[in-house]
Image (cartoon, rainbow, N blue to C red; front, side):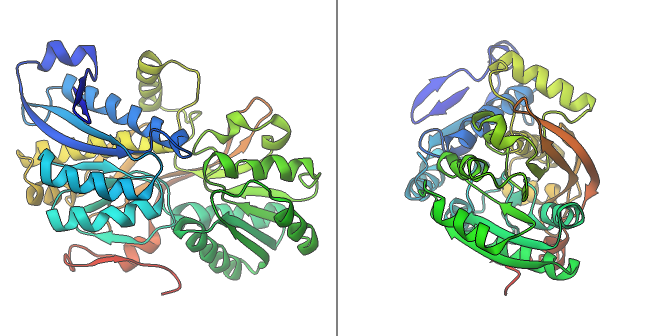
Length: 401
């Protein structure tokens, strides 16, 4: 079952027959179901429902049915803190699955730390979150940008321009681009950090033309920023300047942009629907049965699926949903056969070791995987965050210190 702001709805018909008589354990969810970020949030929420249905069909958690208390953050940061506090004070949740942007994560992370509730952040991000109660199932910059930058410089050249949103994800990712450029003997020749609401990219495109880069690292977020890709292509720059990203496709941007804009764009993420594995085939079949095939599955949905299954595995291993015991079980090095490959939870950093894929946009609004980096370590997070030796650490580490 799913309890959404007091309204009860069915998670899955199959859970009614298999778990109706069981006791209940509640988990919380806060995603952007409306507003500009709902291209991500709806799929995150769908993946949560599908994963909970899967867990319940297998007997629940310690013989108890899992019920979701869900909230729509409406793509507003203030809603995240409001609903996080409500979930802690009123709902009696055993775990929380929430957030897309880094600003949303940083707004609610202290709330769940104080309440000692395991919190799962399931989105690709700039990296560096370190907190005993926080578990990150999305890929970090040290996993994505490290391989993407090497590939991009080798294939396009050493002159780099950064276009990114003006908040944690964009600015810290930009810093990582600088770091990897230095390591590769490349150069950042220009950069622009823009508000999520910007829709006219003519000034940025003019700066790019003036900088004469070999490639643009484009990190657009949300529906408005997708306009950059169309305007860049319309300006005739794609023929001479490569475009790479660590989040293009994360909200199915490849579906809404024209083939003229999307074909040839290169993205590095922890999941693409074209991953070939039995686990992905089974996941996509379940997704199609539940939601159809109108839109491809995004990486954030798989990150949520993985988070739910890791939490359930930890709770079953611990034999309880008690937070301290579940966290200890999560820190035991759990492994899960996920749609994106085998994932392993790193005990010290609470991040996943996972496969990273580089893919190129095709003419049919899809992706062709062109390189796979197996079992990629969250290098930076493992370096700066050791929650086994320092369980009281609660910091968002950034490469600039």
